[in-house]
Length: 332
Image 1: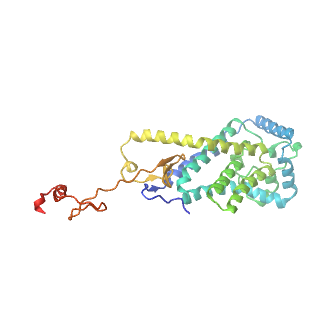
Image 2: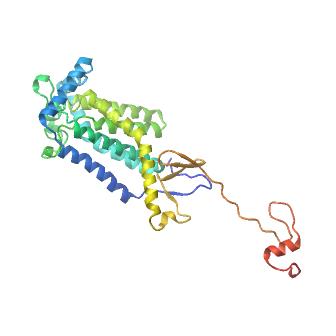
C-alpha cells in the first residue's frame, strides 16, 4: 500500500516537488561522473594500490576474485550474463528504486534518497584520494582476464569498463575503491528488506547485493576489499544521514525566518513529505524523530433556544442565553 495515509486530525502532507528532486540527483550524479573523469590519478600509484590490495588479500587467503575470474573466463555461459549484469543493472535498478520510493513510500523518500546520495559523495572521496587499478588492468602475469573485453562482441560495451563503445575514454579506469556497484546494490537490498514484507522480497533483498558482489569480482572489475569498502561506505552514510538532515532542516529554518511568509508558512498549507511526514499517532520527521500529534481544539458549544447546551444535558438561564447572543432576555 502507498505510504500516504494520515491519521485522523493530523496535518495533511504533500510530495516533494519533482522539479527540485531531479536537479539534486543530477548534481550528485554529475559529481560522481566528474570525479571519475577528472581525478584519474597517477597510473603508477593506482597500480601500486591495486597490487597492495591483492597481496593483502592473498596473505589473508581471501582473494576470491582470482577463482571467480577463472570461472567467468572459461565458461561463457557464466561470463556473458555477468557482463550484462555489470553493464546494466547498476544504472537501471537503483533509479527504479528511487522512482518506487517516490510513488509508493513518499514519507520515507527523503531519508532513503539522502542516504544514497550522501554515501555516494563519501565514495567519491575514495576515488579522489585512493585511485586503484582494478584486477583486469593489472599485468597479465597476475592471471586476470578482462571478461568485458573478452565478450565485448556480445554487448554494447567496449574494452574499457562498462562504457558504450567509443566512450570508454570518458571514464576513470582507476575508480575501483570503493565499489559503488556493491554499495548501491546493498541500498536496494535494504529497502526491499525493510519495506516489502514478503519472504520473496526479503530473499531478493539479500540475493541482489550478493550477486553484484560476485559479478564485480568475477569480471575482474573489483577486489573483494573494494566490495567490503562499498558496504562500509553505505554504513557510514546510514550513520550520518539523520544528523545531516537535521542540520539541513535547521539551516533551512533559519534561512526561512529571514524571508517573507510563503505558501508553506500559511495556515492550512500541508507540509512537504520528507520534511514532516505523518505516521500513526503523530509526525515523523525526515530524520526519523517522532513528534506527538497535538489535540484538535473543539469548537465552543452554543446554547439551544430551550436553554440546553448540546451534549452537556445542562440548561442555562434565559438571561445567560440572551447575554450570550448579545440580546435582552425579554426580547426572547
